[in-house]
Amino acid sequence: MNNSIRRSPVMRACIVATAVALCSTGTASALDLDLVGVPGRTQITMRDGVGNSLGTANQYESRPALSLAKLYLGYWVLRHGEPGDQARVENMIRFSEDATATDLDRKYPDAIASILRDYQLGDSHYSGYWGTTTTSTADIARFLESVRYDPAAEPMMRGMATASPIAADGYHQDYGTATVPGVSGTKFGWSDNGAINATASIGPGFSLAAHTYGPAGQLTEDVQRTVIPGAGGLGQPLTITVGSSSVPVYSGQQVRQKLDCFRHGPIDPVAPIGDDWLIPDAVVDAVAGACTGPHLSS
Image (cartoon, rainbow, N blue to C red; front, side, top):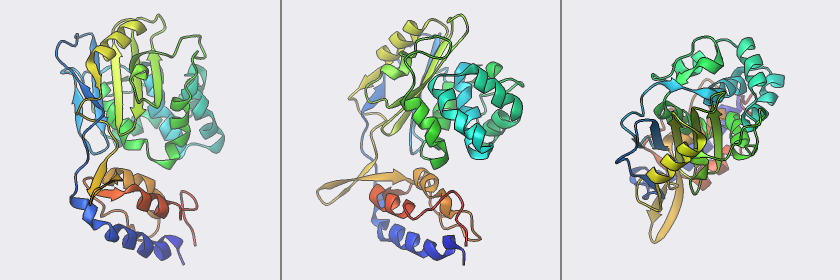
C-alpha cells in the first residue's frame, strides 16, 4: 500500500480541522519601501509569501544576473542533479564559487533555462553560460519566495544563511540587502571589476532583491535609503487571530512546498490547497514530520 495514500486522510483531517483559518488575513509587515527618488541605476523588489510585492518602476528590467544566477542553477541541481553534484551547491552559494558554477553549468546545460521556464521568469534569459544570464529583481524575489520552503532547497538556503564574509575570489560579501534588519540569508553578486553589484536576501515573511550599476557601497546606500524597517508594508510572518491569540500560519504556496513528499502517489491530496489559504504552521509542521523522504513508497 502506498504510504502517501495511507497517510493522506490524516493530512486532510488536519487541514480541514483548521478551515477557520482559510478566510483569515495576515498581519502587517516589518518592512516597507520608500520608492520615491530611488535612482534609476538601482532596482529593488520585495515580495511576501502570498504574492504581494513592492518594487521600483524598473524592477522588471533585465540586467546582468551576476552570481545570482547560481541560485537558478543550484536549485535545479538540488532537484534533479546527481548526489555528488547536489553536495557542491551549498558551498557554491556560500563562497560564490565560479568554478563550481561553471562545472555544473557545463554538466547540466539545460538547468538554468528550465528554471526560468518552469517558474515563468519572463525578465530572465540564459544564453548558454551562467555568467551571462540576465534577470530582474522582480524575478529573483519571486523565485526565492517560491522555493525557499522547499525541503530540496535547504542546502541553498543554508549557503545563503552562512555566506562567507570573503568569497572564493576575495570579494567582500557584506553589503546591499544583507544590511537590512531581519535578513537571515543573502546571495551576493558582482561583476569582475566590481562596477555592478546585486544581492538577494530572505527574511521572516519576505524576499528582497536589489541591483545597481555601481559599487557595493552604492547598493548598500540605495537599499538603506529605500527599505524602512518597522513600517507596515510586507515581510512579517503571516498570522491569524483566534480569540485573543495570534497564531502563526503558512500560506497555501508554502504548505504545498512543505508537504511536497505527499504528492508523488496516484492521489495528490495537496493539490486543492489554494495560494490564499492560511493554515497554522504547527499543523503543517506536524504533518510534514510524517514524511520519510522526497518520495514515499509502499
